[in-house]
Image (cartoon, rainbow, N blue to C red; front, side, top):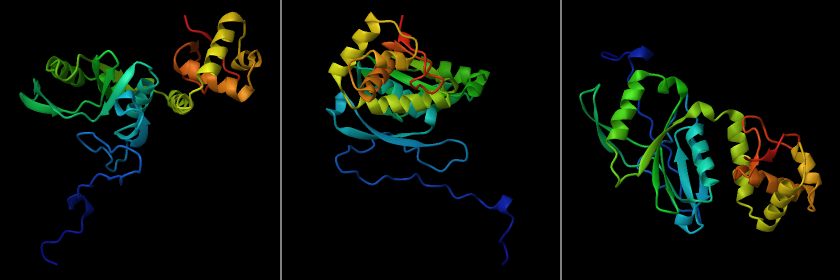
Length: 244
């Protein structure tokens, strides 16, 4: 057919539409300013539901552009002082010195704490953060922030969230949703009053079923009461101790 090209390199790629998640009964809908659930050959998109004090304990749907962004969110959700979690924030305008024009930036996350303090988070991998162009962009973006958007902003290196770290976060976050304050207090008391080396040694000294003691110990690790190596899969043979 005249005018038609069968060369794949010359075909214009059709823009993929983002995946829309149907309403989930009992779950608040996604509230981000942009939907990151588009097809990607590099990034692994993540979605999950979580409840915060801001949602009065009702779960809300969250979408993330990468596993690192979701890991940052999970770590924040383990903080008892967290009040609200927001992702894919509305864009802010900033003067880009390199482009010599105004551009838009969507912050990956914003955390609001119980005292009202708000923190915006910029997540990038180590390679990108090592570029001078990225550092210049960060300076431009952070310099344009106003207090009506956030009280401060931080940069997070996605490379810090290794696979083991992310796996530990997911397990501890799951256990954290199964509250057992009495068991947690007992395990913490034992941890402060006895000697032990491995997690299994601490569990053995607790007056609780082993599975219950293990779950409490994992929650204490998540709250940083107990120290463990987050960059190795935490199990009963892991070295644990009280955090300094």
